[in-house]
Image (cartoon, rainbow, N blue to C red; front, side, top):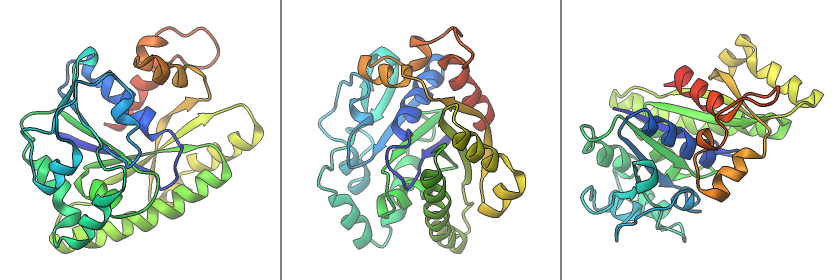
Length: 259
């Protein structure tokens, strides 16, 4: 089993879209997939049609309840633990518990034999819940829009968060997850191309502490249409019709090069 956190301390950069569509694509390949919505704004919980259980993320974390918190996305043959913490109370709860930032990792460890991949969608800001998600992960994928402010926040925010988590993991003798960046919403402007080229420089990646996935998500309306129609983007756009890659080839490349 591999646990993947889709994380970036900047909001609105495509985390939920990536988590939902990567999970649905892997489920289509026959893998057992669990999505975890660890965001105060429950966007992933509403991305697909979900047959919800009574309990969600709060009980999964605070009670380590793995029996009554897993809901089903029947159309996509995958499972989800939905977000049920609109007031952000879990942040304070995690801070007050001696094992708070380890609770998600502990809960997930009870599902090791059930799933091939567990994908965590995280909130778009630094904090205890994001740190718990990163602590639980084997791999972090950060979608980074090809915009200067988004790129700067990715480098600043994720480095700060990963450094904080790394100290705790190192003290406990646990491995630090690899951080991989994904260029997201790449358009044809010169600024976007310049930022993408900088992110592709190996020297820059090494100094900033990340690896770049050799795939990119274009600026295309089909990714918004996917969420509106509650249909995975690889099913909505399976054939290349323009110079930009079709969604199926994009998601396929991301899965092959990151997992």
